[in-house]
Image (tube, rainbow, N blue to C red; front, side):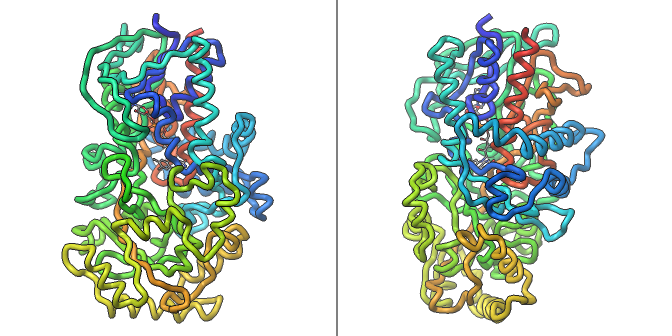
Length: 555
Ligand SMILES: Cc1cc2nc3c(=O)[nH]c(=O)nc-3n(C[C@H](O)[C@H](O)[C@H](O)COP(=O)(O)OP(=O)(O)OC[C@H]3O[C@@H](n4cnc5c(N)ncnc54)[C@H](O)[C@@H]3O)c2cc1C
């Protein structure tokens, strides 16, 4: 045997599983198609936002949260409707995960050296129904160091274990087959890829220079989702979201290729909920791309005015930061919009300065580098430097002093001019009249006022309501938004020990799955919708379960 357990994929879920195995005294082989520069996978690139419930950070900000409220929110968002079948384990995972996020999660991670910003973010504010989708309260805890801070303890532990000879990395090894004997998984086979010193996240050579086989008592699959593979995204795109756009950007590195899902299926594992996906509608093209069609997601506050490709304001609850999939559905199923792949934000300088964040560790150097002075400088009337860089260099930004000039500039970013100045002006003027009172009829303005009753939003996230067309708040900024592919919500069905299940519902002997490959637990812990910050935690929780269960099983 080459190892007690093989872990395929050196992203967050794989490293957490490997860490548990090493701690239990097992010999581990980590097999990874990319080079050593990519340790930590997508999580390294992430914003490092974690879903946590009833924490000291929330309490200090005056937020009252509880496991009951979070479970109500989770159920409203997940809307599990395949309970006897594809959701049977997903729902059990969801309950266990909410308990984890309300219980041990914070202290377990804190003991590993993680810490969080004092200000708790409010992501996915929801669809307006108490029992519907969305977070009733702010729960998005941003980790010091962003994604790099999340992966650090697990990367460090793996490197130490490798140094001590208890863990072996097999980089540039791509698994193409799970080896089975008598129905049990006993190893992996695959291609040795040509050495490539491409920097982190950049595409690497797929030239095959050899093959390999490794044997073990068990294999853990932690190979991520399908977001980097647009063909698979299109194939599994659900009818309820209309048609996939002709042109999409990509929110993940190319190695998130989904190829291993089929390999696991060939070994008897069942994948479920493949039609559930989490793609964003606020994507902008990166002016300095690392991976192909590299998109950055804007993390917006609630104030931008959101227009469709034909210049009509999006309806409730399709407001920035409220309901990701309702917005995607609206854009893809409204008959005269389906042929257009973009939508628009119109904001003022005042809004962009206070409300725009960009997702990704490299887009938040102040938090990633734990630079308090730079972080404090966010509270000014200037846009944060990474946002300003997009305003200066990004292909999707138009800045203008007046609306006519703005609309002309926006029309130049599409093949034909689709926006009418007068239509947009009418809607902006109508909305602007609503900000004179705090008890406005306009539901988005009312939502902005409500958000500002949360101290964190008022301090650092939500601009004081003002007229968009007030020159003192300007200049005006138009931003062309693209759909960007990111997360798979479905995946390999697993039980609460992260054992991969077969079509008969029984575990495939020797096979475990965790992280995005397993729908973050159970083959789809999120159901239809995420509450955000739930992906990293899902990798940690399911990776930990896989490592512990595999360690116990191999004896
Ligand atoms: C920019 C960005 C921002 C994000 N922000 C957040 C956030 O704030 N909060 C949150 O909760 N989530 C966030 N996420 C999502 C989260 O980071 C991912 O869902 C999570 O890290 C996935 O981890 P994973 O270990 O399952 O898979 P991955 O990180 O994708 O790792 C899988 C690894 O397996 C390897 N692999 C694949 N196939 C093979 C094969 N056949 N053989 C060998 N190796 C293989 C891949 O090369 C890769 O290294 C963000 C993601 C991105 C990209």
